[in-house]
Length: 117
Image (tube, rainbow, N blue to C red; front, side, top):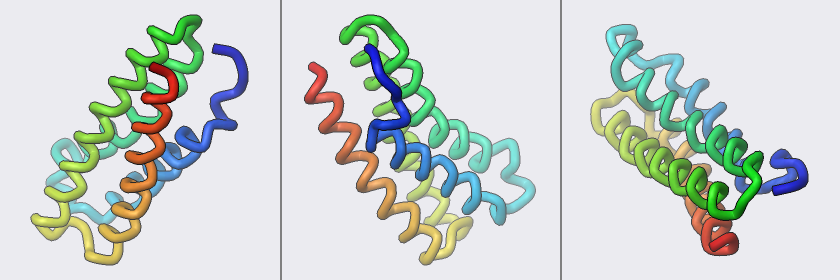
């Protein structure tokens, strides 16, 4: 694909989600550094990085493949955010901030995938 991935609204919002997850997980319990904190950060960061990697590929088929990976990481992020709230790692306010971005990214990512297929 040609062009600049930074112009994609879906990438911009996914990047914002990943950064927000990184910031909000700073206060997770230290015992979770190699557990939920690490897994949630990896999953959230995988969403925009797979968009970038797919966008750099030469074919639509490869782009869709990486967008599918991004979607899988998104769903993992979704679960881990809910899991973190249920364990009290996230405050309700932090959860709401992430949840709003999460909903936006999910919608944009799904629409982007459908527009490419």
